[in-house]
Image 1 (tube, chains in turn blue, yellow):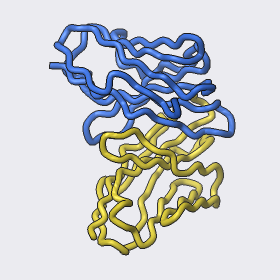
Image 2: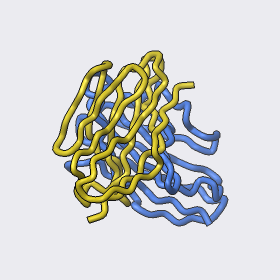
Image 3: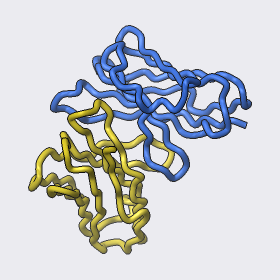
Length: 115
Length: 110
């Protein structure tokens, strides 16, 4: 597709359940980022991928959060044993590289609601 | 810890009333300062990248400037369609991540 695609767009789950959020970056983009945005707040960095490796995962809030990227393309963010404080919009972004072109292209996000 | 701080949190202007949004950042090791626009229910959209003090970039009614300790997003004669949240972000040489500020919610009344 032409842009970054995220699925699902909305996810409602019960406390304690596991969820998987998917990100399809723009074809050819080697860098991929996950951010979390709570209502009315800025973006909180979660993890950064360059290719399939994650040189910076310093923003993952706890060991309940994990992410992987396969084939240098699709990425999945997994949240285990969800808690109510995990409710937020999860945004994915991709860019061509970490060099001079720093422009991030964002998806529309996944709205996660934990009841 | 590297930080990006934006002010004001919210700004309401009359159509045609020019103003500026502020972004203060941790100075040491800055590799790039970015501005994004975010509309409700959507992901942020890239506006500008600034790399060094004194640099300026323009796009339609928006102009971004960078000094040694802060950046400004100037909006000239705004229109209602300029209403959005404007986010400032920074990358530092010591880190892979791009750090975002909490944004300024801009509302332009017709």
